[in-house]
Amino acid sequence: MLSLPASGTWVLVTMLVASVAAVRGIWSPCGLSMVSSINPFTERSRGHRYGATASWFVAGSLLGGVMLGAAGAAGAALVSLLALPPALIAVVAAGCCLVALASDSAIVVLRLPLIPRQVNERWLDGYRRWVYAAGFGWQIGVGLATYVMTGAVYLVPVLGALSGAPLLALAAGAAFGLVRGGAILLSSRARDPEQLRSLHRRLAQLAPWSLRWAMTVSAGGAVAFGWVAGGLLLAVGVVAALLAAVLLLRSRANARTGSTSELRHIPERAAV
Image (tube, rainbow, N blue to C red):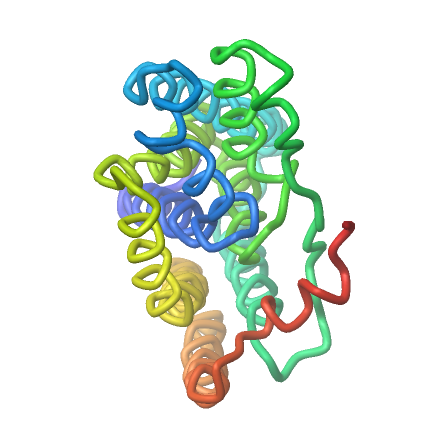
């Protein structure tokens, strides 16, 4: 559908967005809960091997990611049939990136749905290992079944659809699910509660940076697609760069006060 340079740009941005959005999910209530609930010493207390449980979790997450990608693939098939001008599609993609960026910022009223839902940890005691591990993994990997920590999550199926390439949409979803599920391995070295607490302290220090990474990727996507549009539409990329600079500076100021836009809203919107 697009020219070769644009196709390369689309692949790069889409896969980068999928990976960074998945990493940002580590800091969701569900992500942190999974790190605490599935680790070597908790699985040992249940009479299970951590490696097998983690494998089921990653497999479930990968399946969830593929299903997220399948939604984008269905849209990609439709976009391919419509045969829209590549420049127009690039402008729409740049706009979507800006929406995701604005949603993550602290100075724009717009908020994409947070989906304040957590997995049911009662599964740990009520179901067999493969059921709770794969089930938790699927809910994490599908992206939109639990807390959404960045607008970039919505970009994964959207950019996949706009690409007009179903295989790229599926690959982006699979990458999201694999990275998202692979986060469970962060606790693979936690052999006792103190090591787990140390891991959580390190993650807490990185939380503000994870949001900045997601915002930077969304901003970069807007600039890249603005550039792909070319000609007068290159102004979209310039505006995106300026807006990104303002939002990132504001986000950095918020981080110094110990808060981020999403985390401030979680207590207000979470379902207990």
